[in-house]
Image (cartoon, rainbow, N blue to C red; front, side):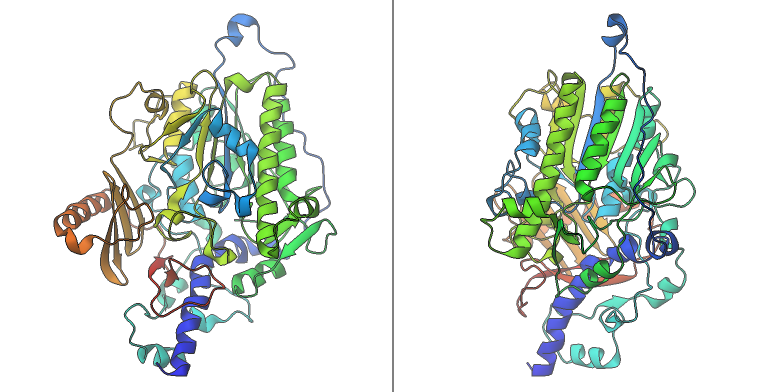
Length: 568
């Protein structure tokens, strides 16, 4: 291989993969309403007063009929190995409060995300449906990038094309950017979960619940898409995909910048530090973002202690930019690598917040009558540069390998779920919708397909069979099906099928497609039938780009590395 060609191949695997796995960040951060969220500074902190419920609890006969409170806690880009009840914790750092949810309830050992990236996954979680049923296939993107951004990575120039053309390795193919599609895109904020979808909040509101959203939304801000228009009585957080955790120069912040990731550079230069309440003016939190959201969740629980409530607590941690609270960083002095230590400290803050929420439920006498769910939106991301976050699974966020979609998935409801339960069959994010609906006594919508099922009868051994024999994932020309323990990745770039038997090979290391053509044909038929029941994407994919499966960003790639193409 010519030296110049190797250089370009390295840029393709390193730089382009960063853009591919991070291009959703252009939706998260570049211009989801640029004028409001980036250009305009946030105001100073202001107190939030949560709408109070009744001053006193209901009388005994009514109290006995009170449906359970429901608390849904979702972390952002949290890997399977980041939680100590499912893995070892980051560099061995325990997560005792998160673990307690699973220890006191159920650990779903095959808990799956609705998608491998945050926005479509959240759409599936909140709607109870495959997000592709309503066209939410890709994370919303914006093609406007800053002048310094290496746009040749996503809009290949002639030199790039010549070098790639001379590089004959099967797996190196040119990243494609669809200029025609980009010219016809609506603003990113107009791309989200449509108002016609029924959210968990709307389901529970129909049963008299007070509904609360805290933290990340990332499901659009056009008319009908905002949380206050999707069934939430109160919303405190941010519509775009993320925020800083503290101002960069705050003395309480310890930062880690990934110089190998061009998106990270943009985040540090442009990402705000702000929240808004019910669509009002943006203002700064009064502390580290994770702790702020936790404290506000505690206050919301206190305000609603005397009426049924649904709390959706959507942390943005440990998503980049990597910023830890100095006290958490200092507490982990045994971790020598700076980036790992910052990341572990961010997870430590999430765990602390979970503990505060659980403690407040107990303090208010609500502990036994609250269904609590903890999960992540997708697997850990390769662009943080840490190799262990999804162990023992292969792959990352933006891939349908287990590392991208196999998640911590825990549920607790004292008296209804036996402590220490382990549930082995596959379950999905969209099951939370049906489970919460059943717990609240809400009838599932009859005018649409609901893909989720109530998990409680299965967990309690009251239902026959399994929740799902088959689960699907789709992103453009990359489709995956899990059926009866067999998992097929069907790709158009490169054009191949990969088959794994998860029961004997959960790490997806041994491709059995060549030995099982009949099984491949069976699973491809399932994929085709599923595709026919889904809608076309509501907006086009703009890019397809390779993501190495076995190396995080920042680690020198090799020409023999395995990869998939991510479409977005």
